[in-house]
Structures are given as structure tokens and as C-alpha cells.
Image (cartoon, rainbow, N blue to C red; front, side):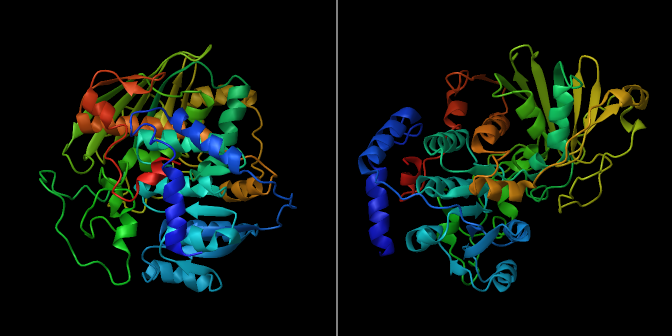
Length: 485
């Protein structure tokens, strides 16, 4: 089947549904239409035995993509059958290609699905934040299991649509790549909460104070960077996917896209998922009702500020009290530390370097959790919590429960879930509301205004422009169908 014929069929089927939140109608309306069509076309499929190894197609194969392919490969639970990248001749991509010479190579993820879709059952997605959405939507619509790097999407609406399509395809396994969610931090938090050690939390302070690539950019910018020659062999138009057109510039690719509002989610989207994840899940935080940009340094209309302090307010949940969640980023934007913070060692344990440090900050990425009776100090990723001050930790030592060891790391967890042996620990249903919280934070930064959010209607009630930013720009012409699946 030719690429064009398949694409025409794809657009035709997508046109049956309205673009939920973009077109002003509910996501459920689009879901009902598509579900009705699936029922009409559904045919009996013979039951097959689970494959011993998952056939995995990897989209984004350089830099972080190369790292996660190595992680998947090391599990011994998958076969890498396809590689896809818009810049396949780059040095990073060449390393991956040399390791997997038998994997079929594609530049455009759409051709991967069109021409090779019958040869794999799962995908890994390690591309810029803004292009997670169309690839994951297409994959789930075709019944492919999805592992996508964090954050799962760039805007509130895109997260909503991804959670919706995942609900409508319960046969599909989803996992977001906050890998610490399968390690000691995850199991310790749950064990301590179950034992009543973590309870009555009323404040969380999360902080990331390493250097970021956009800090040297001109904060007085008035337009996007000028066009530069596109690297030979790169498919720039496919790199852009749904985003509005930008001329190629090395300040976007490779790796620099994260700092631009059009492409990334800044520091909170990058590291929030590694720092806040267990707090958000196990404290059932859901969505905030108020988002306040307490401090914004270097605000402009194009890329993220030099420093940000955000305060999210979450209401009571059952017998759990309201929670104020603070986010600090910026090299010198350090949070206040409680007495006894430095009494215990181990802040840096299991905290991967950001890879962009101009200096090693005295305060590594992490969090401070305040409850009625105890204060906890933690890092990011797999880093476990400690009770502070030391005197209190010594007093509590005999009361702490045994923490179970993880049965599988994040990558094996995903592959085992594809094989029906486990459930993923960071599916879209778990990660989605946290990612939407980050998206609300980004909107508050851009508007530099306290925002009031209705978690029931999922609207910002005190600013129409801010509410429009929940969806953001309409997709580029030719990419609308991904919002209608």
C-alpha cells in the first residue's frame, strides 16, 4: 500500500470526528463518533499466544533516544525491529544504527506506520516534547503500545486527548519515561504512606537549580532566530510536526528546543516528572485550583525565564488536607531550607546529572515534604526520602517499614506489560494529570498572573487568553487529523 493512499484513508477516518477541545466541542463527542465507527468495522481476530520478545520500533534514536534504546535492549525482552529519526545521518543516530544494523530505517514516523506497521507491536518515542502528541496518538489509534519520554505532551489539551484515546483503547499499554517511578523512591513512598509514616502532608517544595541551555539567550528578544542552513539529510518539516512553521536554527535542534514555549515545557516539564511524581500520585493531588507565578525573572514571549517560582494550590482529597506545592527553578533561585536539612547525608544519591551544569550547585534537584508531624527530604528519580532533622530520623528508625525491592525497572516494566505480565507504573492515566499541572504552570508563567482553575470543567476562569493557552496554537495545516483520532 502506498504512503499516499494510506494517508488519504487516515485523513478520511479522522474527519469523522471533531477536534474536541480545539474545535470547541467535547472530547467525548469525538470519542463517541470514532467508537461507533470502530464497532461497525470490527472483525474477529484469532487469538495469538504472547510473543516471547516484544517487537519494538524506536522513534527518535539520537541523544536521549539512543539511551533508552540501549536500556530496552539490555532487558533482553524485545527485538529492535525499526529505527526512525528525522536526522538519521547525525553522529548520534549513526551510533544507534551501527548497533542495530538489521533494524529497518525510516525518516518519517508516518511512513513507519504505513509501510511497516504489521511488523511491530510497540513503539518508543524520544523526540521533542511538542511532537510526542501526534506520534503517540497515531500509535494508540493503531493499537500499538506506547513508551513516551516525559512529559507526555506539551499542552493541557494534548494531555487530555492522549488520556482520552488511551481510555478508549484499553488493550494498549502506555508508559511515560519518568524512570524513577519504577525504583526505590516509588516503593518507599508507598510503603511509608501505607504504614502511616507519610500522612497529613500540607506543603511540598520541589526545586531544580541547575543551569539550562536557554539562560544565555537574549531576554529582550523580539523575534525568533533567523534561518540557518538545514543540516544535510535532515527532514526539518517532519521535525516540526504539528508546530507552527519556524525556520531551522541550531537554537532549536539538536536538544535546544526545550526552552522555547512553542516546542518545550521548560525546567518544570523536564525535571518536575522526576521530582514530584510520587507525591502527585500517592497523595492523589490531581489538578490544582490556583496557580500563582510568585517569581518570574527574565520574562519574554518566546522562551522560558531565567528563574521561576510557582505555587500550586490543591484542595482536600478525602481525609487528606489541602496542599501547597511550590516549584523553584533557576541557578540562584533557591528555596528556604528547614532546620536540620543538612543534618543527614545522601541528598545526591541516585540523582543523575542534568548534563548541562555550568557548575555543581550546592542544592541538587529534589524536594522537601512537610507534614503535620514530620519533614522529609528527598532528591529526584530513584532517590529515597529521609526524615529530618537527624534526631527525629534516629527516633523513627525502628518504626520504618521494610521497603520492597522493585521487580522490574521502568523499561522491563513496560515490556512485561506489553506481554501481559505486569501493569505499567506510569501510564497516561497516572502521568496525565501531573503533566497537565505542569502545563498550567507554563500558562501562569507566560501570563505572569495568578490563575484560577476549575478542575471539574477544566477551564481557567479568570483570564480568557490564559484559558486559550490550554490548547495553544492550532496545528499546522496537514496535521489537524491527529487531534481528531
